[in-house]
Image (cartoon, rainbow, N blue to C red; front, top):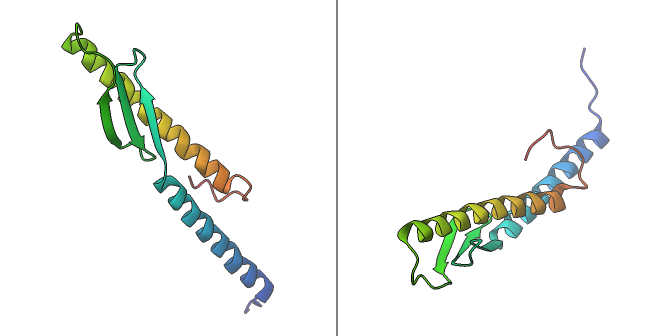
Amino acid sequence: MPREIDDAWIEEAIASYRRIEERQEALTRALAGIEVAVRSPDDLVEVVADADGAVRRVVVTGSIEGRTAVELTRAIQQAITAATDAAGWARRKVYEETFGGYADLGGAR
């Protein structure tokens, strides 16, 4: 038994798909422009990462005089960890702002 095709339903599905595509493009553009900068707890190191968590820059901002290699390494690692955490938070925030008011997309995130 053939089913009738509901033209209105098809048009709404196409429109919904286009809205999702537009939001995906907006999300991609927004994420491309995000950078987070985080300093180590001792203010010795600053790390800049993009929204994907990729480290773009590591800068020693404090004096390393009198610091051991272990202290410097720890400061770098703490700043990198904090930057990747901040990038994840920024990604989630932009996603929620972009898709927050939209109907459930089947759990896609």
